[in-house]
Image 1 (cartoon, rainbow over the protein chains, first blue to last red):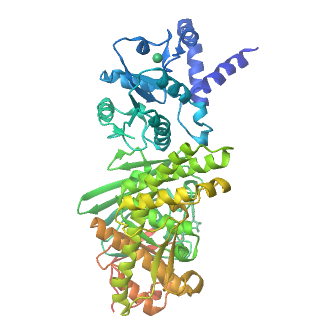
Image 2 (cartoon, chains in turn orange, blue):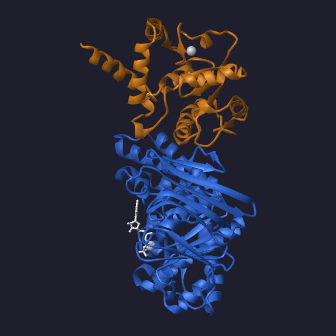
Image 3 (tube, rainbow over the protein chains, first blue to last red):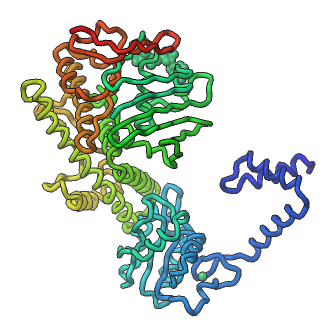
Length: 198
Length: 376
Ligand SMILES: Nc1ncnc2c1ncn2[C@@H]1O[C@H](COP(=O)(O)OP(=O)(O)OP(=O)(O)O)[C@@H](O)[C@H]1O
Ligand SMILES: [Mg+2]
Ligand SMILES: [Zn+2]
């Protein structure tokens, strides 16, 4: 492999990352070449390490180094309340509030036929099993407040309600069509306390 | 509402122009192809972010250039707004009073304009989608919630359509969930459309009949496959009727793999109680009906928002006979600001007065002729 194609390979790999186009990938590649060895090595090692060590929690789907994750293992958390979110990063948004004391369940996405995602591709079966096997009393559905997030919430409530468990949806105050990830803490905590039954 | 001034850079045939308008009637004079409609297009784009001729942005930027910029200053009782829309590197950007807006659709509800132009006849004679878009634009302009629900309805509709198309076996719980989202947004849409159509009919009954001196024979009928209820002021009634109809047609929708029920199929029909104007009306009648729809749009903005919109009139009055043209001129607000184009002053009826005339020459230079009123 000559220099040309080695650099090309790096640029190709970088441009596969979300939000990074060809131009930015080139800029990053030349930056890494110019800087001292430490910069590139540090980045490469961090990437390898994170892929090696960080896994999804087998209970809730959170990102974790140990399994189950810290939240699932914490005896102070209230296991009777499960907050259902789309992505592990949504857990971070709730944890920043420090007011939520229940546990989580990550769906790993949201129902969207246009993207080829049906219920079978999400961690819905796991959620139902979990409910059956534990003393869950309330499910709070915190999917994004857009059409797909709402439809997923409605679908889940149809599956869970017959199990005689209260299902609520956070909503109030969140911008319609918005993204949970970008909601500020005040809005999010209001939305959480103002949840309503589905 | 008044347009004080506008500046265009690389917009259609204009390289760089600034124009100040009179609060009364502004007459734009120029030969065919001089750029009269282009000027109205620039004003209108500040009202809706879109061209009334449905042109894509890369057709609008001046040939051989990459960006365009339109900036207008509007005034109303609520103060002055500067609206700036630019197209840079294949992307639109919106500034309101100098501050960037995240969504281009935020432009709605600032500059109220009503355009009268050649293609308006399609409101009567064209496909149903044109009529739905007409209602949607009016309602989105006065009500941001309508716009949100419209977007939601469209997303849910696309998702459900794909689900029906791609699934070999249907999960009724999931289908029901999409239906609930359709009902949620669709009922609000229906509720608002019903009330707009009621408004248009009462406008025809009162104002139009008054000006024409007899009971104007046309009315608009909203056609939908969601069964009408006897209480359309209540969104809940519409919701239950919509839900029921979706349930009744579930098997059919699954069989044909399509969304059948809902406002995405609706239409607006112009009738004289016996006939459909689309098939029985003369060109002049269809034209007049379409102008009346636009007048109703202006009156609706006035009633709901207390704002008299700016009327942009691109030549069309000339397809009417003289009597009807004069009636329309009476129907159109005396107090409203108007920007009207024509190729020749002699084509205008005698009752037509103007406060300011602009002459566009072959090179796209705009010469302001100052204030002049023709003697009657
Ligand atoms: N993107 C563009 N860049 C430069 N010139 C353009 C562009 N698009 C259209 N034109 C020019 O603008 C002219 C049309 O202008 P416009 O439609 O405003 O004419 P008009 O004065 O309304 O004429 P008419 O009386 O026939 O309606 C065309 O002749 C064309 O040459
Ligand atoms: Mg024209
Ligand atoms: Zn966990």
